[in-house]
Length: 91
View 1 (cartoon, rainbow, N blue to C red):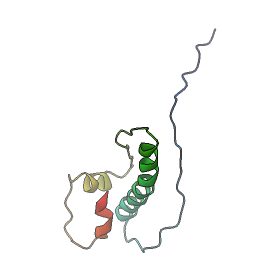
View 2: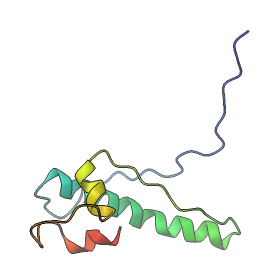
View 3: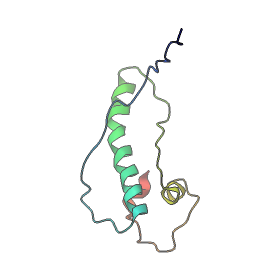
């Protein structure tokens, strides 16, 4: 007999697919911009769920770019102040 497959109760509930309007000059900036837009899109969903009585833990966000991860988590400092748009630091 094969074991029963493990069913995970939660999964992706929303997927964002869009073209970014600003011109991005590097892969790291594009990755940080993607993190910014995804996090910005998740805020209304989180607030709605909390208003309906479903408290939400912190939302995990993944990236495959180590430099973008370092910039977002304050482990890497940029050398040029305007290399990445400052609004992306909201993440």
